[in-house]
Structure formats: structure tokens, C-alpha cells
Length: 178
Image 1 (spheres, rainbow, N blue to C red):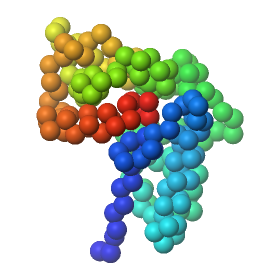
Image 2: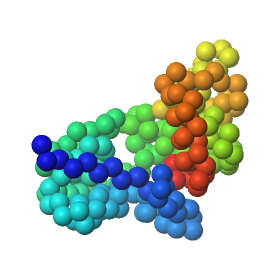
Image 3: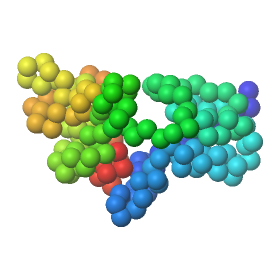
Image 4: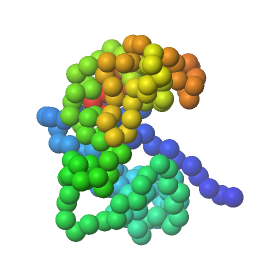
């Protein structure tokens, strides 16, 4: 069929650098910067058009690059001429399921989750593990319940090998890139 698949790591994950914010600018992690990185990667690979699998917001900044798209777990939010902070979108109820991103960006989780074992417990929670009363340790509106992870049963959504692998990957730089 002649297709080539390229799967770059997201900034802060896998084999990439994970610049700390601060002192570095948060713009290193913004959607526009990542979209520009994908465009540059396509240029370096000699591709003027791509079929994009992943986050659809890349097409918002470079529609000339994206020929076709399949999106993964991404609610559509139309482009706007004015900037609305995520905090406002979560508070007004337009994007309540992004509340977890506010928790991750606050630095609160990073202060508590430091060791590789704590990272593994966090991943377990993110993938549906439950506490002793069958409560979830994570929900999209509120984020991670930082008191539950040590008491969690193991998630059925990830194998032990996968949990170990991702714990190792996150432990390289900590979770500040999250």
C-alpha cells in the first residue's frame, strides 16, 4: 500500500527531553508547538501530506499538511479568535472532563508522586484501579485521589509488564512532563 508509519514520542515522554516548567516556558508543551514539531518532522521525512492518527488539533494549525485524520480520545473544541483559559472552560462546565489537567498542571501531583513505585501506583490509578471500597482513584473531572494509590487493587486494563514498562519510562524524568 506504500504507507509509512511514524510514531514520535510526545515531548516529555519516552525518549524525549522533558524541560521543567519553570524555568522553561510552558509553551514548549503547547498544542501549537507540538503541531509545528509534527509539521517539521513531516518536512524532514519528505512528506508534504500526512494521514494523522492521534490528537486532531494538529490539523487546526496545519490543515494543508493533514490529508486525512483519525482521532483518538479527543473531544472537538472549535477554534476561537480569543483565548479562554482551561480553568474557565472547566469551571463553566464546557469542558468539565479536563479538570484532571488542571490538577496535573498545578504541580500538586508532582509533589506527591516522586519514586518509581509511586509512579507505578499513579499509572495503576489512571487505568481504572479501585480502592478498598470499590471507589476509583481517578476521574477526569477531579483528577487523581492522592490518598488512595497505595491501597489499590491492580487494574485489569494493563498487564504487569506494561505497568512496569511505563513506570520505567516515567521514572526517567519524573511526571513533570505530564
